[in-house]
Image 1 (spheres, each protein chain N blue to C red):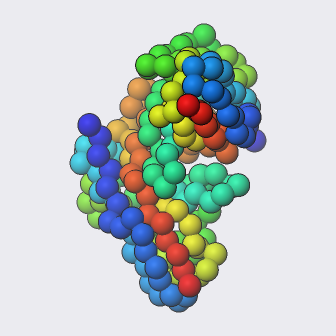
Image 2 (spheres, chains in turn purple, orange; image 1 turned 90 degrees about the vertical axis):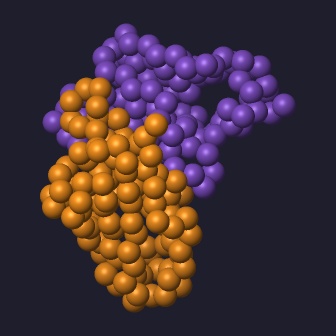
Length: 110
Length: 115
């Protein structure tokens, strides 16, 4: 069974304190791994898609990396506006259906 | 920019009412999806559609139906609303089925309360 586990469930950082969010997964064949950001009461906003182990993508203070078992979302020198819930989702080979993790709620304190 | 819109941000309905949630995308995407999101359970797929008039069940289709008469519009129907259908409903669309066009883009969500 395809599974996605995100850790930690919640993370509090001081402004400027870099850290990483983890997404561990099990899947028979991976077609893609996706990261989204979700603000309270809103729909998820697309951040990155990763397709193969070793791939990295960056956007402003965020960098996503992928191995064969997990993905990391690295946040460098975060700001309060980076506070949100970050969702990881995998798309198995041969499927239309995303499997989502429960998310990591990030709070960045000024 | 990809734009997915949902007809209502908030809805309050009575038990037993028929409820229609509408979703429109303006990017000529092939695929459209309906999810519900509940605390502690995450996002769960209700139905998806890969073409006009085509639909596939997701993980939790019971109590719901869908309609896709036009490519840009995907409707979720609660035939007889129940209190356990109180939730945040999210619509998404994706361009196609081959990399890199599988990315799903989400609408703002409809928060439904069934009394």
